[in-house]
Amino acid sequence: MLVIIGSVIVLVSVLGGFMIAGGNPVVLLQWSEFIVILGAALGAMITMAPMKVHKDLIAQILGCLKGSRYNKVAYEEMFKALYEMFMLGRRNGMVALEPHIGEPATSSILTKYNSFLTDHHAIDLLTGALRPLIDGKVKPDQIGMLMEIEIDAMEKEHHKPIDVLSKTSDAMPGFGIVAAVLGIVITMGAINGPVSEIGHHVAAALVGTFLGILVSYGFLSPLAAAMIANGDAEIGYYRTLTKAVSGFATGMAPMMALEVARRGLPGDVKPSAEELESMLKAVSK
Image (cartoon, rainbow, N blue to C red; front, side):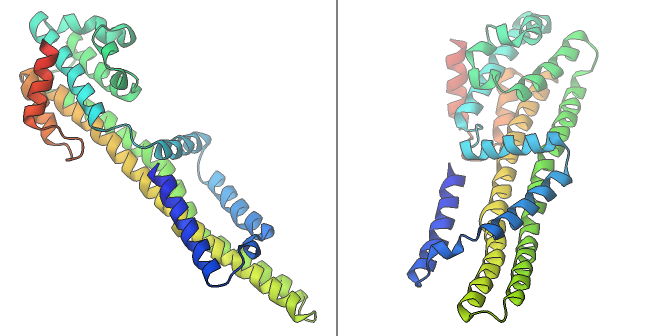
């Protein structure tokens, strides 16, 4: 939502200031300039990366428009789900977790926490860590390393669409210059015509430069920054999950494992120690 609000403010400020100065916004509708700049940018973007990256780019842009899902409530649900899983494993042995790990969608624990269950990356991380631990294929102190490897791979994959969008943003002023040069070429062809006609062509050429710079610095660069922030929030969520699972696997009590994970959270999503304790006690009851 903030992405939409910010973009609207940019557009209103630019057009509003132009109109206050006596400009007519209709003269900015130079469709040939739009086609040259936006078409060239789209073609360059398609050339930069495979189809999967473009699909991820669309998904990340939609995610920015919706806002991050990793808020305080999401963390609280994760802590509750992990606490129930950890307590079950501690009381009845790690083998008791096998039905919940094998079929998360039918787990009597995980199905109570929808935001956690519907995050397939989080579920894959959890099941991918606990399954080999239950089977005895890895040592408890190796769980954290395995999960960090997966998170690093996610982080690299997340940054590929951002790189494409950032490079496109950097290229927009250049495409604006291309459109402006083409406009000047047209102007030179009409140099013997009326002054009003020459003025129209020059204005159209300048619109190309204006559009390239505006789209770059007013829309694409801020959107790339918003995607980075969303990605950081997502990766932070998974790293918190990793700390909790790794702590439990190495012998920490469930409450202490979650307390260690809680301490690394940013302030806007971080429950206090008292809130965490009260929340987990309510789960126990």
